[in-house]
Image (tube, rainbow, N blue to C red; front, side, top):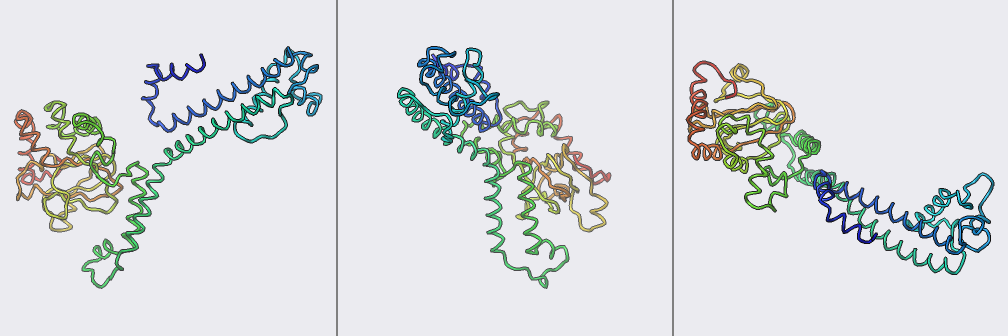
Length: 392
């Protein structure tokens, strides 16, 4: 019956559901193997204690009249006031003594203060040690795998730090005389940039972003193993609350299938303090699109800014939960209002929705364009006329 317990546990809907609901399978495995060790120690302790009972005939005076391992321990170790395994009412003391022997046998510690005495006990003790050796090897091997799984994030971080250090070692030394401006000298200084790189990698670890890529499958590699439909739905589930912040991409105008297609194109981008994000189609930018702030703080400006005073006048602060570029992304190429910039103040994470995904969604759903997006387009077109440069 005991042998069938694992089968019933594996086939139990409750157990399966419980396992699937756990966020960390590694921690669940740790609990599983700890429980296995406790159960195995209990069964071995009961067997070892029962062996003494079989030879003595009872747990009373028979333990002192016939040879057994309890008598051997009692004659060599017992003192008044200590643990006493002799007597019908001493079940807990006998169990503690048996469990102690069981644990030291399974873990290969072997203090030697509890040992076989009769021929039968030597035979069974040998068998128990063989079985314990196999069980302990299995548990140790499994726990090593669990420990490695628990440390996978730290290991990935260490690998990325090593990769950054190798890259930094190959950087050319800075030449201050070739910098045109002080800000340019600071940006392209080898030592300063190396510190920014390391700080950026550290910030990504603190926010559990250890992927080398920015798309959804890079952040969650398991997405690549799913079917195309499940990939879209998974991406949608990850960014649903952020898509709701963009009016014409929200559930009010687009159905789940349409929003899932947009979500599949989205990217999660991280930026360190001091970096500037340009919203344009030139080679030095990430392209045009909508920026949804997930965390961090930044200054944002619409249009082309030609002077510091103009930038100071037009800039506004955006924080987590705000959207930048929802109207400007709809403007045609060449329109000065279609460009913009974000100057990062603190470590910032944004959801970037590419322009191609936005236009494709609006082309498929004309109602979203007519009832919402075109008004955003009109507002972005006329915002520079009335001095309204806030996020649209």
